[in-house]
Image (cartoon, rainbow, N blue to C red; front, side, top):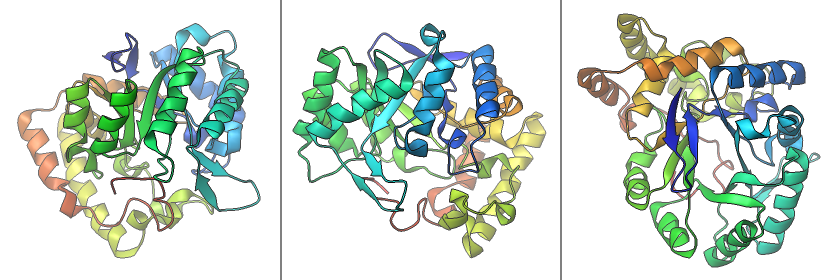
Length: 328
């Protein structure tokens, strides 16, 4: 398993890491037994960077990880997040970055995870109504108290990263990044490199679309993707045409489309860490093997052209899903 540094913390993490969100919601019903089997398989394969958040499954995802991590704490680097506040009886959500909320959210996450210290604690979404100094200051106090080892930000602009990093060192920025979501190339990757910040890429397989293995027309009711603009109508038809080129490269290399997509992402910079989600051991092994696929400069150029930002149709979130995202 390839390893990359986590900011300037002295920690290293596996490449890829594992996004655990789908084990609790958004992509179908939760299956705790299957999730525990997948997590065990991930550790067997060398994954040690596990990503969760307090909002995933309204705490279920952290609780699931907490049960699994009993007796395994020293084998993993755990990242979780605060800031998106939801209720079980409502589809509404709000963003809370206040100092009081951060302190209580961290304590709740520690309880659910069964940990004394969170390795990487992200501000999941930014609320501009709360001064950045208040948010980062509250996060820094958690480090001083020993509750958190390193700080991260999610879906922020390069300007916010610079301002936050001047208050307290930021170890990682997490944003959506893949062949079909190229926004971080517009300044964020360069800023991370300059500041020594690791870039963590979530949804590196385009919410499963880039695997070529899902049929968007047959998604289960309640699947997050049924309401995603990129999976609907003309946008879906246009995006499906992009898969043909990706599949052609994969066939030439004796790889899967997912492995090509991850290999492309890993090649972008030495500080990029993708965290694809997976709920089956076979998919975990497939994703891990992507680190052994070295694309040629010609193949990278072909993929860059095929998935140029203008070639992908549809917004990456439906209206209402962009709250707290600073760069769309």
